[in-house]
Image (cartoon, rainbow, N blue to C red; front, top):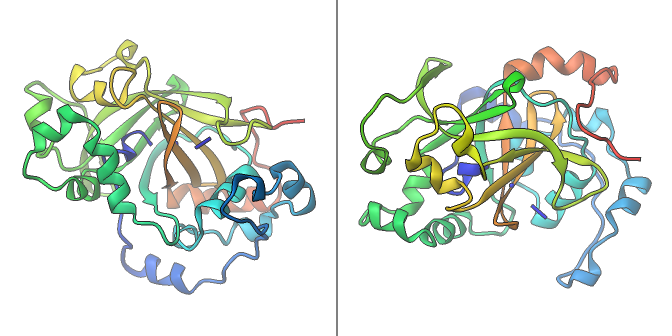
Length: 281
């Protein structure tokens, strides 16, 4: 099956400056994708695909968020299925939704959010697409605590339902953000490919976590969207994720920390990156 939490109600980082331009013209990875059709029976066997066309470290270091935007949903599935979980991240990551090639991402996001009657009523005249593009800017992983919190940089839209009271804040690259929508972190079975584990970001029972706020945190939990994300590492500092609502696939997303990417590249190329989750047999 297929996972970020508030990726459903939030979303997309636009290209920024020189890094974005550089990535657009960087050498594209030479990754094989099996042919497929519209019908389920035409989809490739993922285990056979990995056996015949495993991913190489040399090509994975070339993968960028911009490259992911050029892939179809089936190609994103095939890439994700061949990735290891990698180590559970630690620290702040920027995030964005990956809209498959040929899809209408904004309409899909509005459809998901529109299903939340309470949320739609709170935002009345405001376009859900705008909420999705401005609200969510990333995640903060607390690996030792096995907890994740989402970074919300524009609290104005949520303020009507957040209410009063102090909300924890964090500053990342000079940008202040509020920490909301906590989730539990653990290794668990992938809903797309059960041959190996993924890193799970689970919002179901976050009311047990310190700092939980009934609103808006419950919107992602078991009484709301029932969000469950899963991620796997492409390379250090870059993770591909899948967001699920009540076990139904919602969207793809990417998490990136450029500092960790640079720090971990040498070990990655040398095959020294460890796995915290079960890597299969």
